[in-house]
Length: 201
Length: 201
Image (cartoon, rainbow over all chains, first blue to last red; front, side, top):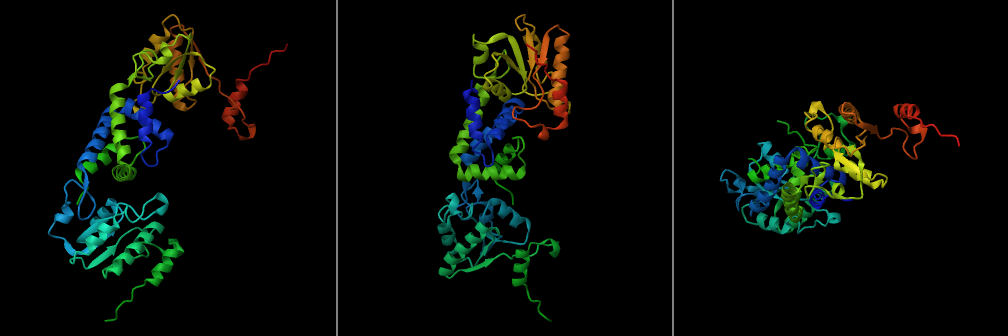
């Protein structure tokens, strides 16, 4: 006695989603087939269309429906600055600040040797080519302040410095509204080290 | 600045999956598009095929690829017993016991008025018709021992008793290997009430 093949196939396929184990996949399959067939049909179609119609922007590597994405195609951006982020969400977060008007490069990941993600998987060759176009004056590293994000920033810094390109890293410190009492000591130590001197008038 | 439409559509579609919020949907979309396009294509195809090729068995209401499922079509089953379970997984659990040889009725849910799931959604009319075929001698309620499962069992009992059909409920008590010290008092109280008298030889 086994599940029907088509049901078993669907459950197996749902397990390719990150963080989804056998029980969740089963619950999802029942939900799709039993409670939300319209949603299921939409999901199937959305996957197909995303796979066929989404590409990576030739310049910034973000997901795009056109060879050059709207940000890279815009002539209102500061082409002398290039921010390097891990994921498309990070790019969106940067845009939400409304405080950055340069261009981007999206790594689509971070160095993670254990997961088999090396320099090639995060397209460092394309980043270097992009940063060496003679127009970019500063590469701003905006990878996460995790172990992997820091390692990625370090590797990129080495590569770009070897080519004489200026590199900066977004600041590490106490978050806005943060109270010292609730900040971990590592962050506080960094905030001390990276303290900014107030100029006397 | 927004995500490309096809990406946004995919993220929205993934949120139809139960328990998936905006952040998880985003992570899933990136994973499918970036790290596992083959898996994504398989998932899309599996959804399509499941939607078109899976139906409900006309007798037991379980998912099936044929109008009558293999269990109902088998002539090795005891047609006098009909076990009522909530979900296809529960049916599989019953089969794993290798201790039940009767037939099934799968409700595909449980009574849950707050979620809009009433007697019609769990096909009680079909269950009653199925149980009144003159062959079924006993309906064994194997819904969960949750509030909703119990309410469902109660409602079915009322409906079947009104039609003079014998109803039983799987036993509630201490699990095999269970230690009294670690059992909640409600279960222990029930195990006491439902105690079985050992016949003296």
